[in-house]
Image (cartoon, rainbow, N blue to C red; front, side, top):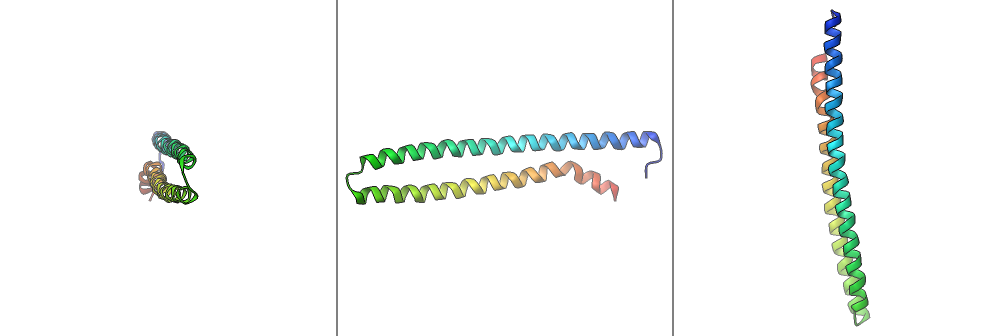
Length: 109
């Protein structure tokens, strides 16, 4: 338990430090997620533009279907890969944001 005013000040200081560390981890994690989302959006736009160019250059309906099918397959694979990566980043973000408080909770027991 807290016995003196100095102990109370120390506990308060530790709590503020833990909160600042947690906010730092949240900031860094959300920035990494934002970078990944922007990269994916940019690549998706470029791929879509390339698809339109290929479709306009297709000489037959069969070729157009082939181009569209290839695009759909690669777009799906790219989405799944990026979604997995962003999911991992969210998981890491939660772990890093919780770490400073983990020590405080262990001390409280």
